[in-house]
Amino acid sequence: MRGPLIYNAFVHLTPNHHSHGYWRTPEGRVQLGYKDLHPWVEEARLLEQARFDTLFLADVVGTYDLDYGDGTATIRNGSQFPGNDPSAIVSALGLVTEHLGLVVTSNIIQDHPFSFARKMSTLDHFTQGRVGWNIVTSYLSNGFRNFGYKDIVGHDERYEWAAEYTEVAFKLWESSWEDGAVLHDAESGAFFDPARIHRIDHTGARYRVEGPHIVEPSPQRTPVLFQAGNSAAGIAFAARNAEVSFLPSRTPEAARRDIAKLDAEVVAAGRASGSVKTLVQLSTVIGSTEQEARRKQQYLQDNISIEGLQGFYAGNTGIDLPSIDPETPLSDLVSRTRFTDHVRSNLRAAAEQYPDPSAVTWRGFLTDKALLPGRFAGTPEQIADEIERWATAGVDGFNVVPVTSLGWYQEFIEYVVPVLRKRKLMREEYEPGTLREKLFGAGPRLPHTHRARNQPLNAD
Ligand SMILES: Cc1cc2nc3c(=O)[nH]c(=O)nc-3n(C[C@H](O)[C@H](O)[C@H](O)COP(=O)(O)O)c2cc1C
Picture 1 (tube, rainbow, N blue to C red):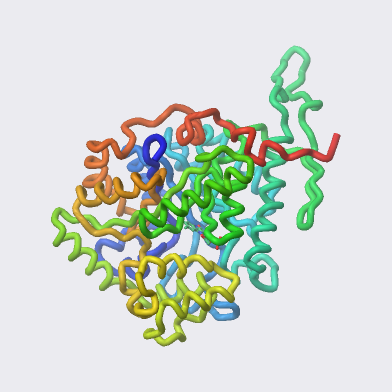
Picture 2 (picture 1 turned 180 degrees about the vertical axis):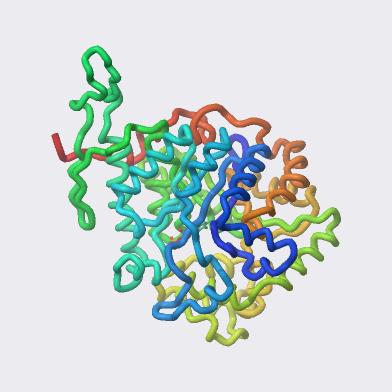
């Protein structure tokens, strides 16, 4: 752990993010408000009062179907369907908060990089430099078909695509406008200095973009870069690009190994050791006693929709899971993902936490706590102990996964946060400045060792 631990609230503007089916309980019905603005505004305020670092808005741009399936199970269950556009909410949340980081997921297939770079620069202005970008390459076949592609593009090819996509965005954010381009010189009448604003003239395999960037440099220029690649190609991409990375680790020991592996690649990419902050999943069930926490955990499991979960994992892994015998060993499923182009690391990481994944059935896995990564049921003190264990392994923070995106953080804030404060496991106050300054303590811009700062322009 380097500096105060980071706490990231993980939400999705959708009926069911991960706890599929829980909306049917009296406690879960709060999630019916997912399409209104007010509950999100209240949540952002609450998270800021508690000193959460970031509100992270997940997103997918299609249904969880199989290659040519119809997505019926997930549509019926409202499992990450529908999904409202997360970037649309950022201005409103930025207005009612002062410090909270606002991290938007945006997929390389959904937006042309020129319009995406423009949107993010605008939001960075509107939030005084508090936006982040979760760079995702999409694992849903339907998502690709929504944007005119015949089918999902190969796994590693998506990362090559992301490399060019980010290159275009980085050129627009970092190289198009020199410092000093903004003059506001009323005497001469020069608002800007054209000699310091450059076309980018990008020509690549997928994009041709002339430029210049049509938004003034924003406080951070490039939003803080989040990423969750867990495959070899994904880790290589994270090492070159990410500033904050979500680890797949299911145990502190695994986290130690994953951090060392990522850091070695970060250094090989010419960046400073430790320059990528690492977060692991933390999903808690809180009770005033251990027994109460276990009862609540059981209640949660009893109210999970297995159909929704099967559909969710099917879209995630590219395997037709609803048609698979529930008694199939988990290890068999893991070997099948090797041949798909979806999220290969998902089931593998889940299986790794079992000493013998061939002894765990698919049904057992779904009903087990593994269905939400990092699930931990206990008292606030026990949860703080758990957080301490992970922190000692060297993680920089936690992706705090709620049961329902709306409403659930109230309990965590009321019962767990005071214990974390007492143990100095959560910051008392925000650092001043932009999100990058708050998280990394240095300036508002990416360091010079990051590839974004070294994109040569072809023009001028
Ligand atoms: C915490 C976390 C959040 C993620 N959020 C999204 C998301 O909002 N949208 C999305 O398409 N993928 C999301 N992903 C999936 C990743 O982008 C990535 O596809 C996955 O981790 C597999 O890595 P790989 O592509 O290197 O195999 C998320 C993954 C994690 C661990």
